[in-house]
Image (tube, rainbow, N blue to C red; front, top):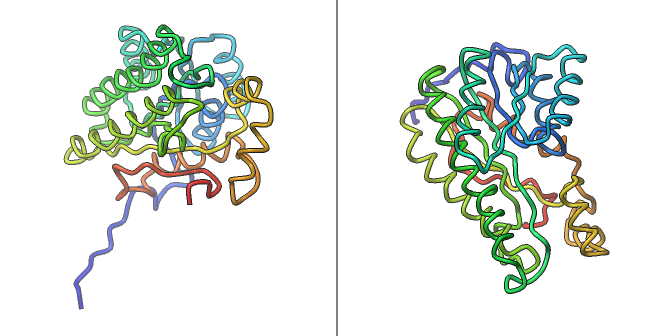
Length: 266
């Protein structure tokens, strides 16, 4: 019989998934990012919210504080390397460390065939959805390494990255590249105790999907029809997956792209 040893993780002694951790969340002013910031705080983390729109950040931060959580916010442009680095550095200044990060911030493209997408629009999707994630990961790894020593990062991808995506070709391409960055980072930083995973949400009721639906009437009906659970997710359901992957309860999970899609890609 194989000799096995039970490994007890720190999560065994805490009441919340993220108790005692400092979390950094991008795109935290609305949608999945805002839901994640609220959830992480409820699960015991001290949370720093980052996004471009200060009014949204302020509102979510005040909501977290009113519920008894610990949160602060930083205005951050994911397309600007200096801004991203400053946001991560500010997190360390505020709370003395960085343990976990959720790279959620993204922008959508105008739906349609790739030959109809203007080059400036392609460049924007690349800069925010791919380069922005890379910039954030580089800064986060440095901060985790210098403070907590070990930690976890989750990148928000999409099920649209897992197959051909004729309606959102640039968006899907950047998210597929995020999957590759995630896997490469997991292999690179795993020996240091830094785990890196991604989630791939399916149809989720966010401002982004509503903007897409405005350009493509009947979108929700089409997406629901190919989802075995026959409904869209709410942002909180996606945030739950990110919280688990960032927690010590997923301590042996790294380099994965976890589908959270109601079975759409089954």
